[in-house]
Amino acid sequence: MHLIDWQSVLTEHQVHLLRELGRLPGVNLQIVTSMRELDARQAQGWTPPDLSELDVIALSSKTWLADGIRLLRKNRTAHHLFCGLWADRRLFVLLLYARITGCRISLMSEPYSDVTAGLLRDQSGVAGRIKLWLRRAAYRLAGIVLGPAVRPVFAISPKAVAQFTRAGFSPDAICPFGYFVPPSQSQVTPNRTAAPGLRLAFVGGLLRRKGLDIACDAVRAAAAEGIGISLDVYGPGDVSTVPTSDHRIQYCGVIPFGDTQKVLAAYDALLVPSRFDGWAVVVNEALLQAASDAVGAAAMLRKSGAGFVFASEQRQALAELLKKLAREPAALAAARAGAAAFRDKLLPPVAARYMLDCYSAQSAQAANPACPWY
Image 1 (tube, rainbow, N blue to C red):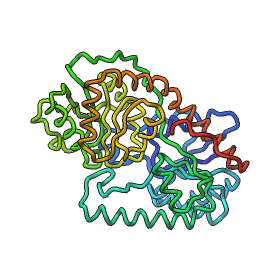
Image 2: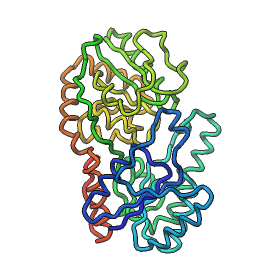
Image 3: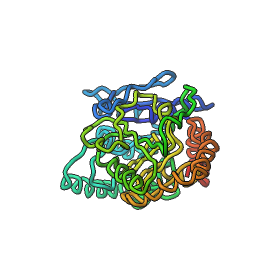
Image 4: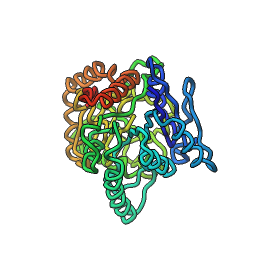
């Protein structure tokens, strides 16, 4: 199988999967990127990934159109996997060209944001509402133009599955997917005696979309009823948004890239209270957390029992959940057991094999393989 993967930016979200995919027998994998780095991600502490073993072609900013068309023409019989529809509009132009010329096209995408809060930076409510309307219209148009030709669609989260179905992509072509990172190589013994009570962590940009205010309100509500509880906040952004006047809530800086798993080992649970997150890879890194149902990776928690899901924006529901965890150690113990049993399903080699099986099923017009994660 000759697979050409078209990416706007290569990050840790994808490289481990791609490396394992390229190692599978019979797979010839090439990667085309249109941007070397994304400034907004760099500002959040992301670092360039290790590209060893990967055959990467970087499109020139000046000759990207001619170079991309040349690659498509040269590789008409290959499978062309485009990652995202509009992460880079230049790739969308090449996707349309591939559609018009009859290339074999597949797609991998997170859901589009269905909230008005900005993805990488906070923005006004008016701008958010306009962008939300435009996203919905653009996906409906994409379904009309691309839907009949795209197989498979690797939809990252159940929300993405629903959105692509509504947009007009064939349900038979949609394969549930996610993001996958390997386990940390550092051997860490969790230290849960450093502070009394339930120790919680928040890891993410200090943006309204990430829902830190929801987490802080829930922690304070639980503490008001006598629950021993603390929340450590990690992430880049406007530190003034962290209410450190409350001694139970501490801002702890930015976790060095690659150290998240090691840091989280010291906590009882990770809180992911996002108003929207296409997936949230930090959930993979924690495997024991309370996540809002607006987080794509919450689907893994429902399947694995490795964590807990609460309704997005429902502060009181989260507070009740935190009280339950503090009062019932057995609930945390059961979640840890669920995490331990589920970890092997999240490894990049499992995802690579599943992806290849999806391509085989689509080529044979057979039923898609069962999703391992949700």
